Structures are given as C-alpha cells and as structure tokens.
Length: 563
Image (tube, rainbow, N blue to C red; front, top):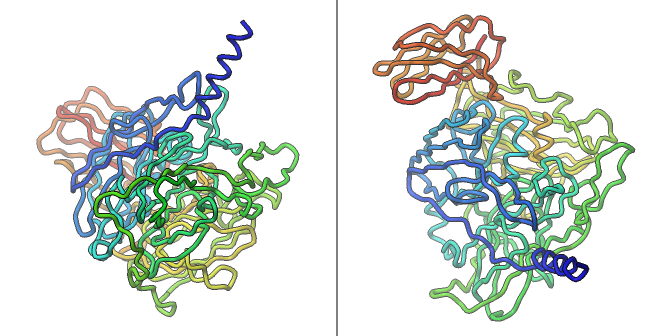
C-alpha cells in the first residue's frame, strides 16, 4: 500500500511538472464572425476537472479574430453559458451600443449581433465578458480571445506576420484555484500560470526574428516580462498600435488588460533554449506581483508564492529557420499623430480612493463614488479633445482602462513617460501616490442613451464598483427619445415613463419579458398572439431594462430606459 501511495504521488508530481506544447488559438477572418460562448472543462490538475468558459469549439479561450482596417464586420454572439453575459471588444473603437459594456447584456440562449466599421490601427486587441459584478468569474474561466487588426501602414513594414510561424499570440494569466480545482475570481494567492490556457508551456520558435503579441489577461497580477539571461528584445507596439520606433529593452511591465508586441532576434541560436520570464523581484511594492505588502488584521491573504520573485512562464526551444525568414528588425515604424495639448477643451481629474488608506482588497472608488448603473459621470460633446489626470490615493496600484478612445500619455508625476508608454494606450497602470495625465479625443460615435465605461482592470475591483461611465453626446444635452427599429420591429418612445408601444410588421408576438441589467426577470406577459401592443412599464423603477420578445420565428431583445 505504501509503494502504491508513493507511486501515485510520483505520477501526480510528474503531471504537474511536465512540459506541454503551447496551444495556439485557431483563427477567424473576413467580415462575418460567429462566436458561441459555452461551458466546458479542462484537466489542468490531477483529479477533478476545472470548469471553464470558452468560445466555439475550444475548451478554454476563443479564436483569434482578424479584422482589416476600413472593412465593416458583423459578429453574432450566441450565449450558451446559462447566465447573462456581455462581450466587450477591448480597445476597439466602436459605437457604445456595440461596445459590449454592462448596458448591453446578452440573456441566456440569446444572441447579440453587433456590426461596425473597423477604424482602428494595426495592433493586438482582445474580447472578454463585461457583465457588472460577474466580469471576474466569467473572464478568468476562459471567456476571452484576441483580436488582430491589420492596416496598410503595418503591411508595408518588413515584420513577422505569419500567425503561428513567426507571429505568436501569448495570452498570459495567473490564477488561483481552490481544493476542487476551480478558478477563484477573488483569489489573491494566484500561483498558476497559464499561457494560451496551457500550463507549464513550451514552444518551438525558428532561429529568426519572432513577433510575440503579449496580453496580460490576469484578474489582478502585473507581469514584468523579460527573457532569461537578460537577452534584449524590441518593443514595436503598445495597446492600440505601432510605436514610432522599435524600442530596445530587456523589461516590459504589463498590468491586467495591457498588450504589447515585441520582436525577439533568434538568429544564430538554433538548438538553444531560453525562457520568457517574469522578473517580479523588480516590481515595486503596491503592484500585485511585486513584494507582498503587510496586511491589516482580518484582511484576506495576498501572499502568493509568486509575489516578488523571478520565474519562467514559457520555455522557448529555438529550432531551424522557416522558409523566407525575417532576419532584420526595422528601427523606424510609423509616425503617430499626437493630439496637440492646446487642442484640449476640457480637463478632468479622477482620484482613486478607498474607505481608508489601509484598505488593500477593496472596495475602491473613483472620486469617492461607487459605480451606479443609472449615474452618468461625464457628458462629453462629440469631437472633444480632453486631458484626464488620474491620481492614486490608495496603497494599491490600479490599471485604468478607458473604453471608446485610445489615449496618449503625457506625464507621470510631471515627468514625460518612458518609451514603452509613448504609443496609443487604453490601459495605464497608476502606482500608489502617482499622478498620470493623458490626452484623448472622443470622435466618430455619439449616443445619448448608452454610455461607455472607464474602470480599474483588476477585475474584482471593477466588480466591486471601481467603475464609472460617460456619454458621448451629439448635442451636449440630456436623453432624447428614440424609436428602436431592428428586424421588423418598432419600439417607442424610449425613454418612457409609462408604456412602450411595440409593433412588428410580419411576426406574431407570443410573449414579452422584461429583465434588469443583471438578467433578473421582472415582468412576464404570456398567452399573446399580437403584432402590435402597449407594454405597461409604469410599475418599474427608473432605470435601464431589456425587453425580450418571443415570436413565431424566434426571439429578439431590446434595451429601453424607464424614466
């Protein structure tokens, strides 16, 4: 019996330590995309499988979507996870009704069909759920994927761009799992590294110039990327596009939600091995991933064994060159047009606050206010250029994410930002006691009904209310009444105080259901056989809601506002 017990232990240890070939997500391209979010499970550890979310045929994560600048794309998202969700196109410049924030939920067994023109620069973006108070649990279970945008400027450069050959996606996460091998959305002792959903991964890279697209998709941990032996690399892109010039470096810090693209020169290194590292020992205290901070009595444990140490995340085996290799790294890339400082017509200050200076695990706030779905924090006229200043008055570093627009950082504590942060950004890490300013322009899209978000991208902080919202307004005033038209339906007025008039031209409505934005059913009307009727909403509280109409050909959902 003793020998059998030790044999089991040895097998488990071997399974935990064995190297696994890096999974490369499949791809979808063109102008029409179909994504089905579903439940699944993965054998990450010995014993019980880990419950996961995924898209399409994957068991974890989703396919990489290829967009081309200037094209119009249509996406059908099918929600089969048994819970209300959303899908946010992180970093992509889209109308607010297609942004996938908490105001556009997808009910279970329903679909959502955004259509938008790709206006973004060539870069690495991503998609993930953004359901209020459920973002963490849905995203860390694997409901995420990359978006790669191509444009003519990037295509004219001699860069690696053969996906899975010399251009590799790296979705990096650090998770905490419980004793039943299930992901913990609030776990601050995270110690399981996944790269593209692979534990203990290795990859075979050819001995030439390689492009790595790095995404920090963790719930809270920041990574200080580097290569073993302090081998240098060139950063060529940040969140929203290429830099002006390739930036030679040995370190690259990315907080949750941030992306970067780097070039690694592996010429002449065939048959050698190196590692993609996290140099956590160099992160400052206050950044999750750096040294563990002393915790007040009664606080949840935050002492991950990975805090403040250096560790390998991906083993790289260098193999023979591929056909037609890229062997030279370009130094000059694109000319980014920064917004002139004197073009800003408004400035805003957002302070990161908490109930006390000793709070380490939240809740955290913007300007002492927790998120309220019905409060619009800012109304911004279309085509406005603004300067925002972020001031962190807490002891914890927060990655700030802005929806709708890419921004350019101006300064950190009065000092111009480093080369790695000079490109287009949509996430910036603000350290304790730091002040960071950026300039941006709110252009192309206005909607007086549906807001965009700004929030901390530490997902538990976001779920706990460290989030705000803003309207980009076409007229600079309040809500205007609209008629909603979609797929042969007409719904008005919106907003409404007492009733919605619903009309369809060629369908028979059989049932109407009203849900709040958390997916909770509030009102059901059955036994209908109508093509036109008035829906009484007078008993609802003021707020945003969803009406789901079941008819003889399927179902449709619409958002409306009760005044």
